[in-house]
Length: 475
Ligand code: NAP
Image (cartoon, rainbow, N blue to C red; front, side, top):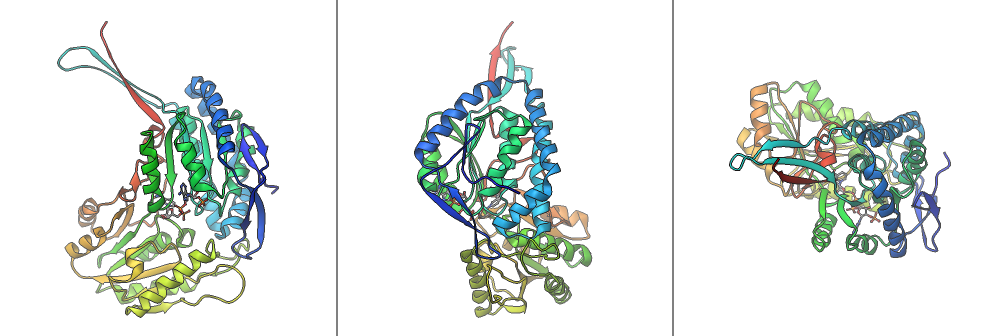
């Protein structure tokens, strides 16, 4: 696959004086040198987006829908190419990358279907009898900022609903993984996306670039996926112009396995929740609470499943687990394990950084993890399963909720009544019940508490890019 490396503004490629390197995490070799945008480039992108949006917003929903549908068809025909590029720049194994490419493409199909369903409302005002007319209109120019863990899907999860709503966008991909988003642009052109509607600005001057755009009066929406710390800062910047914020932030997902759970389902679900994307996911299982009576069997079986995974360069199709994205992420994961072991956790498998090139860390299981361990308080963001035990239902609910995060929780139980009661008590935007995977373009993805604001996917996803207008009418 021949991939572009320059800025994408107004449907054309732009070189810059300053560039930065993208590293292949499996080999530590330079994969590409990518253009780095500055404020002048942002102004050019804003001009182009503003001009393109007028025509796009005036198109019928069906016309917008058909462009998105075509984008889904084109991407679906090129999943292998996208998967390979995702693996090269992010490191994840081919199976994870293919899963991501498929998921990313699905947002175009889902929002092609949603584009024609921006339903409004007409009703009588109870007191005056006037008509209340409610309709949704495009919110305006949107700045989209995405992380490195899903270079394709975190972009399409924002681009597709924005376009469905009638908005133009400027997307700032993560510096670790800008290539996939740039590679998507020729595909969008082919699908019929007009020049200027979608612009891509990789940059190494991220803070200044984004801040500049968030203070341009033409921008009305900021949609961010990334860490809670950066999200807090963006919310402060967004306040200056009272922008519409959508924030998909960090997580610290608990998994609760009751003693009445089906063991095969619990192991399979926990493996999926922990190892999808090698643990580099906001939805990754971070704290695994297992009922004391079944903890020995659960730990033995989870360790066997983790040890059976093959670690290596993700481009090799026999590999299950690729490298982490960079040295800092690998070192942070290693530090979490060392800290937990020093505080009394038992290393059941893994835990040794392999020698040689690449930011590899092996699938690892820790049992008897104390509540004070750093990996209980923070996102691990790597292939480490940290097991704790519980005996009392009320106690485990309290422990699961004892975090500033509220993105996703997982519950495994054979007693549906009890399981639903527990799900309702969990302070999380999403719950996987006897399932280790919740992400679905057709469902509202998002968190409570400091895991974020707003939802992506589902019907709600498009409304994040729309304003509600109410007309009080008499006739
Ligand atoms: P990050 O450091 O917050 O970076 C995310 C994006 O923000 C990147 O494009 C980054 O650009 C940019 N950025 C960094 N500093 C910025 C600033 N001062 N102003 C504006 N933009 C800035 O997060 P990450 O390490 O890439 O991603 C991991 C985090 O994302 C985890 O916490 C994970 O839980 C979260 N996440 C959440 C969801 C969700 O849906 N809730 C999904 C996936 C990931 P540079 O790359 O140029 O620094």
